[in-house]
Image 1: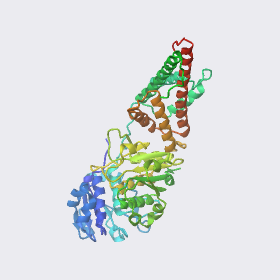
Image 2 (image 1 turned 120 degrees about the horizontal axis):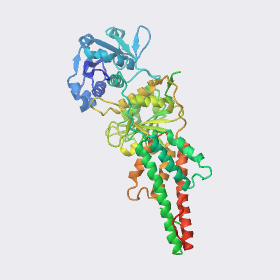
Image 3 (image 1 turned 180 degrees about the vertical axis):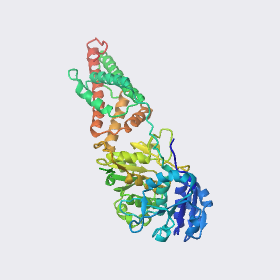
Length: 261
Length: 261
């Protein structure tokens, strides 16, 4: 059985946020991924109208239940495991997890523990003092510009937590054509290719091999084999019809050019 | 050796976007993750001042090099592999990748192919017609509210692509047919199917869509496109030859059954 993070035990904590729209956008991301709680700690400017507009209807429940704390220790008091996010590395910053590593670890952690994922203010992130309250740090890897938009960083973390599984779900592969079905198809292709002079009778293998190489790269399904065989039969019918049309025109003494389809 | 996606070969394509700030926020996400190009196709409202403000300095280079196209086929013409993103599932929407699966696949794909990741408008996403241009669809899994903020969806995809790594030696993927080559092939297939009455003139789309769905699952190479087009031409020649043979036989007063083989 595949295990997941208990998202209802996970909270997003936004500390010292400057821009109300970022709280709303973070709320929407958290709601999309099933996060259980949103907490804001010491927000600089909390305009609920602006928050709710960006949160959209989908996150309105999370925003209405949002807890507002005046200090960070108050916001984090009830949590068993606290993860700090940081864009800056080095120094005393003991980053020990990538988002994916963190997510894997939180699967067992979240089953009986309340987990907070903490984000600092837009312009400078969490201070060293803030990080003292965290059990571990996580950094979202970037290509060059390490400063992410706050709500986008929240989205990446929530996405990683939501989709973490102990065992990757297997991709579904539908029933493929069996060898018999494939060989019958190749036989019909060979006959059709010969009939339309796409291959010549003396050395039929060259172009047939090409078609075989082409088709064998794919995981052909039974119904796709039927499509190909149906096309072969239609080409044969087409030739017969052209011949009949020609014959009728010839017998009438007016073998004009073939009409185009 | 650990292989990665060649991010310089990846483009984010935003189609029919309503809100300039979303283009800017998507640009910032793309720049954070090292995406090579940003393209907007048929934007509703392109206010560059608003785009640049949200993009921040970090993405200003990407925004200034941004390509603006008036139609989606124009935007996608030069790409070898096109991934459509969709929040809606079911019906004919053949979602075959999670973001992580997609990212793993794009490691070999991106080494010699230009890859576009396509996002639809904020309010309703890509249409079925838009999706016809895609080789595969990807869906960002959500807990309940499936509609993501556009720029946040771009961030999740870019993040997955940027951090994808593989250790296993991957199979080599050669250059694939680009969108132009594919569309020319579909056009020729359509004409041929109509000519041989495999599709009827009143409702040509049904069987053509089937063929499209079938072929778009595959990573068609340029020379395979040539094989398919060569076969189309050969079928046309075959019909002409059958007609001539019939005409000759009819004129000679002996329109016997068409010879086989």
